[in-house]
Length: 63
Image (cartoon, rainbow, N blue to C red; front, side, top):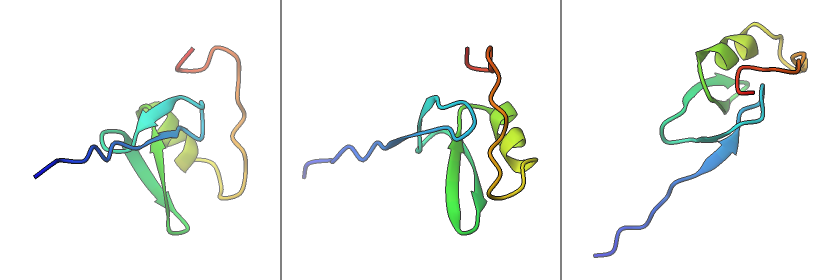
């Protein structure tokens, strides 16, 4: 039996960093799962109302 690597990556919606869906922290909104590089980005996402784009600043958490 051959194991298939199902590793999937996606972008953090706050900082744009590529994250592994299998290991990244996440949150759900409107039935969709969002993945984050860390708790800081997750909290920023959760504190932003649905549909609003969080303000991206130079020198973000992920550099």
